[in-house]
Image (cartoon, rainbow over all chains, first blue to last red; front, side, top):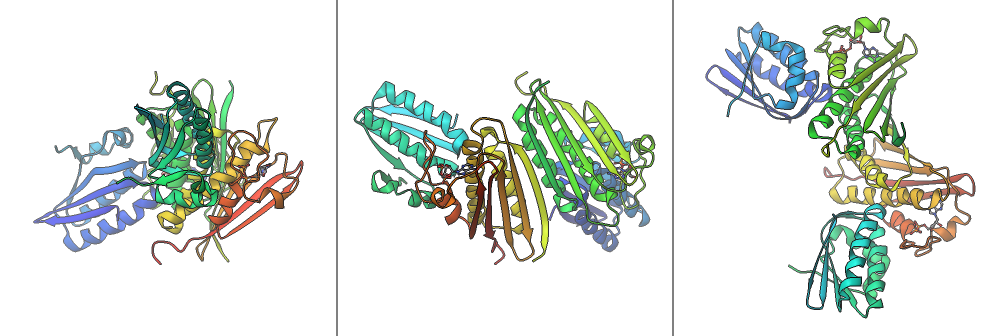
Length: 104
Length: 104
Length: 144
Length: 144
Ligand SMILES: Nc1ncnc2c1ncn2[C@@H]1O[C@H](COP(=O)(O)OP(=O)(O)O)[C@@H](O)[C@H]1O
Ligand SMILES: Nc1ncnc2c1ncn2[C@@H]1O[C@H](COP(=O)(O)OP(=O)(O)O)[C@@H](O)[C@H]1O
C-alpha cells in the first residue's frame, strides 16, 4: 500500500510512498479519507518523504485532502516534499493556502 | 565495464557482471581476448557470480574464450554460474567439455 | 538532424498502464545519458500526457494510446503521445493553467506541467479525431 | 479467453535495443504477478527472439522489430516478435539445437532456449517476407 497512516492525539499523519500518479492516487485518497472520517483530526499531516515520483495528480490529491479535512474543521500541512516535486508544487500555487515544510 | 580481469601466476580470472546478451557480449569478449593474448594463461577462470541475466549469447561467449585460451595451451573453467542460468547451460552441453563449479 | 533510435508503443488506455508508459519512454531516453533531473522531467511530462489519454480521451469506449519516441544525434528527444479519442474543442483554452473539464480531483495543471518540464510542447487536436501531444526535451546529459 | 491488456512495440533492430526490448516485455508481463523464475523465462526467450531479428533478419538494411504482448485473464502471456527481414528457408532445420547459419559466436541455441523456456513456441517464416515468433508462457504467479 502506498500510504501508511498514524494518529496521535489530534494529529493524523499520512506517510505517502512510491510513485504518485492518477492511478495510484485513487487508493491513497480512499485510505486517507476513510481515516479522516473516523479520526476527524485537527491537523492532517501529509508526509511525502518516501515519494519517488509525482505528477500533477499529486496536486489534486493534496487539494482534495485539504478540502476533506476542512469539512471536519481540520487543517492540512505538507511535510518533506522531495526536491524533484517542487517544480510541480510551484506551478500549483498550493503553497499560498497550505503550509509546506521540511523536517530533518 | 561488465568484466574485470585479474591475473595471478598462471591463472587469469575474468569476473563478468550485469546482463549478458549478444550486445554486451561483444565488449566482454574483446576485453578478455586482449588479456589472453597478453598473459597466455595456463588457466582461464570465468566467474559468473555477478551476472544478473544471461541468454544463449553466454554460451557462445564461453565457447569462444575456451577455444581462444586453448590456442595458447590454456584450459578454461567456469565458476559460480547463477541458478537462473543453469537451464541455458544444460541445453548447451558445455559441461561435457568445460569444468563448472561453485565457490562459497 | 539524424534520428539515432526510434520506438513506437501502442497500449490500452487503462490507468494501470500509466507507470508502464512513462518508464518505457524514460528508459528509452536514458540512452542519451540524461541527468536524473532531465529524466524526471521526461517522465513527468509523459505521465501527464498519458493520463490525459486515459482520463479524457475515451469517456465511452476502451481506446488505445499511441506513443512514439525519437532520439536525435544532437541529444534531442521527441516524444509524441496520441489518442483517437474525443479530441479537444479549444486547445488554447485547454492549455491554460487550472483549466479542466473533468470533475474528480484533476487539477487542470497537466498541460502546464508538460510545458514547463519540456523545451517545446505541441498540441494538435480535433473533436472526433483525437489528440496528439509532442514533447521535445533537449538532453544535455551527464557528460556535459 | 479475454485479453486483459495489450501492448505493441516497434523498435529499430539495433543491438543497443536488446536489453530494452526484453525489459519492456518483462515489465508488462509483471502485471500477472509472475515468480522471479517465470519472469526470467520470459526475459530470456524474448531476448533470443529479439537478438535473432538483429543478427539474422536484416543483413543488408536497417530494419524494425515488431513486438506484441498480450495478457489473458487466465494468466497466459503471449508475446510475438516479428521482423520483415530475409526470412528462414527451412524452419524445421533452423529450430534444431546447435544449428546456425551465422559465423561469429552464435551458438545455434536460440530456438532451443525459446522452446524450453516457454510453454509453446510458434515460428512462422517465409524467405523475403520475414519471421514471426510467438512465445506463450503461462504465469502461475506468486499467488498460486
Ligand atoms: N487527450 C485528451 N483528449 C481529450 N481532452 C483532453 C485531452 N487532454 C486534455 N484534454 C482537455 O484539456 C483539459 C486540460 O488538460 P490538463 O491541463 O491536462 O488538465 P487536467 O487533465 O487536470 O484536466 C482537460 O480537462 C480536457 O478537457
Ligand atoms: N529472425 C530471423 N530471420 C532470419 N533468420 C533467422 C531468424 N531467426 C533465426 N534465423 C535462422 O535460424 C538459425 C537458428 O537460430 P537460433 O536457434 O536462434 O540460433 P543462432 O541465433 O545462435 O544462430 C539462425 O542461424 C538463422 O539462420
